[in-house]
Image (cartoon, helix red, strand yellow):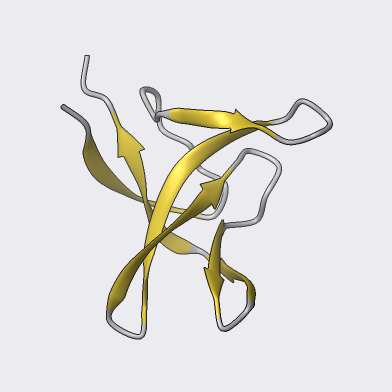
Length: 72
């Protein structure tokens, strides 16, 4: 079972669940962040300055977020 770990910026801890790839092949991971009190899913990657969370019809950059994590 997956759990969530707090992180900041593009810090991706070992064991984070990869969700896919950008068109250029860069890895994406499952992220979530609180948007006006609602946990909202999004994406994060080594190449991004924070999680990208869809909110208010655009991607918001959130530096304090959580990543889906699979404990080993």
